[in-house]
Image 1 (cartoon, rainbow, N blue to C red):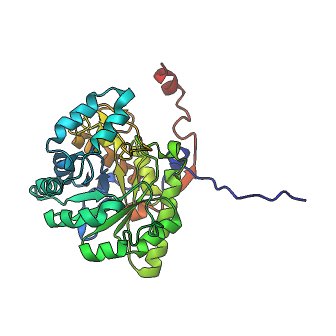
Image 2 (cartoon, rainbow, N blue to C red):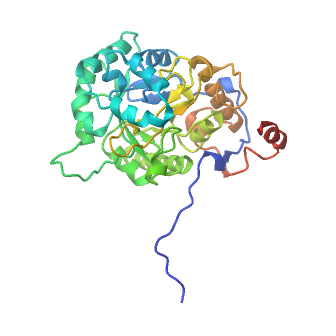
Image 3 (cartoon, one colour):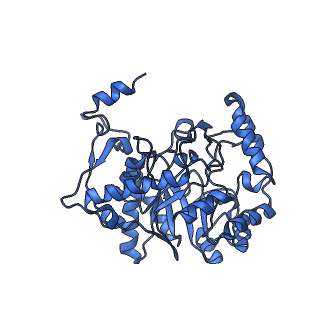
Length: 381
């Protein structure tokens, strides 16, 4: 008699296992349209800088906004706990790796201060750009109204895993539908990585879904907890939820692939598998203007009992504008990300991001090594 199976396992794919097949027609890169809209705000590039203390501070948010994207400020980080965040960031960058987890736990144990939330948001708004800021679900009801009053334009509610339904002992936790109604501004929520979770989040009335659990360079959730879905499969599932919700409601809710994007190739694959925009951390932590001083760390790192994240040395590679728009000084795809997207879309015959969603994706684990023998041996130590 056949042996019964306890459960079926599905094959999931990450960026390194797939490739985008070129189209039958090509398009000039300068004729591609790559704008991204969230709520009433439209940005000229579909790229968000991650709400991480080593990536975004008010000055980076202003510069990023002037370059056409949106950088999300972490409202529960160093910027809202310390009068002089530069001093604290400098201490983190200089601290020995062996004790940095304990240091970060101590740094993030300071209370979040309402007056600093207001001050940081006003620093961004004084430059006339759209201000996006991030909170965790646990603190959203307390912090979001303060941030809105200070001038925040877009709220991002973000944790390692966020769902529309959460079981806890509290009488009434965060109700996303109520939050959206009370704030009356665009709300993006994440992170999730499955069709069902994304669809339920969309039903709450939010304006965008962040996709990705544990793929970031500084995140160790997958190692510590074993939880996550590779980003290609996660993006495909959440894109399917977006299309199902659009058919059902007539409302388009963009999805933002968040984490695991290291270079232009990963970025193009994210859009080819259904992303409307991407959120990027470690490549921007390498910018000359980044507050991390060549270091990057996960936002779950300071957890008091179970840190999930590590401080990594990313170095300083180029100014932020060069990382986004070039000209590139390296051959590994980590600079001129916007140029890579436009060129990739052109090769696929996609005039728009929506057309890029229709690109043919193939399973191709050897896409980066096929025919690259000389590159591989010359790059060996």
